[in-house]
Length: 431
Picture 1 (cartoon, rainbow, N blue to C red):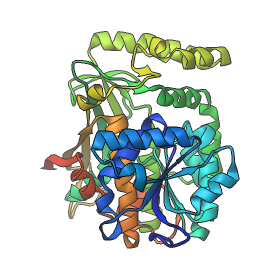
Picture 2: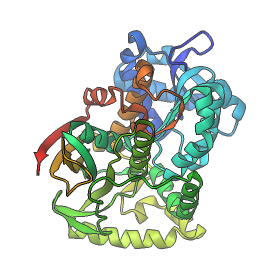
Picture 3: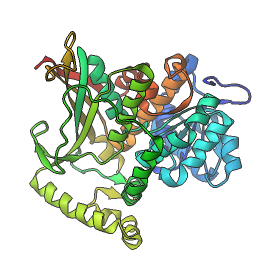
Picture 4: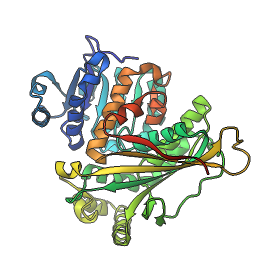
């Protein structure tokens, strides 16, 4: 397994899709953390379809970070998802490819394939369960054979949730059996929004939900054992006393990713699996009315190709301004933040999880800066830095992994805590 550069593989990291909306912020984050590479240095390059656009990204990063040397020191590689030979040539030059090209259901697989075939580890920031689970089904065995780590969902989807559950388990004195997470997002006076690439992923994800169910059947998994009291599923809309606002089930990749991590840790390390429920706060009654109206409209339109076309063409209109083609401004990003609160229960040390009700609780939090374009690049880059610096703490073979499966035994959480995340215990102990 390669974690060091060589004459034939000159770069520790290649940022692919560097001129995309998220990619430009990943470039800035790599530049900020270059001293954290192996032996205090990081050799890196950026890649994409257009040399001209990539040059502009370097110019912008050089200006933003006051690092004029970026324009001459960071190499540019021209590579296109539609040209397999260019992807192969790119992957042969890097230890890790940070893939920022989405929606992943359309553009992700050629990159995973090229990475696995050419010996480059692959990290993405995908929040699409169908793609993530499809890559595990189709490429895990090949990645094992090649010693390549393919680690999906290393952004806001789903490092805070996946590593947050593991953090909660590790801080719990006993056997943790169930966790519920509640996400709240704060914005400043100018509000906030999300780039429409995420909106497109959601549209196609809902449209293809039947395919995800059939994909899961192909794994042939046995149900994970339930330890302790079975977690109760909440309704589609409820008032949460935990966060003092209305909440809905979290619609992203987190539940899928956390479950895959728990399965890996149970099957590979015989660890007791943790049940998980994920929810997101939506605010007061006016927000609920807006959400219900937008949700019903979305649910109806996503079923038809004409409806999907309209949703994609007018993201701001149909999402009440939550998504936009322009994405958030830097000021909006600076003023935004997120908070996951985890409520866990289980059995204290010495108590038999098979006997009686859980007798202990714990509450933890994971806080961070703006989720999509500040926290996501930090999480992605720290995942790469961890892979480079701690190869002996990773799973013993390559493969297609979740963040929790890949990084459970590493210092990723400590690294994130040094870069603006806050993993903390609020309360813990017997109920």
